[in-house]
Length: 58
Image (cartoon, rainbow, N blue to C red; front, top):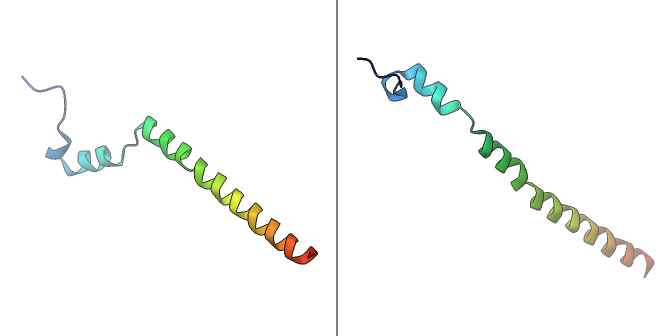
């Protein structure tokens, strides 16, 4: 009897398709992991603008 599951390592094309598959949970984790970077970058921009404004007013 044949095995209903195909081993992707036995076929190069099947392995490439298997390797390029994206897990839906990992894609969501990737998007949420960028949020702290955007928050930190925004905070840095605010600090730089505040320092520049302080130096211009002084």
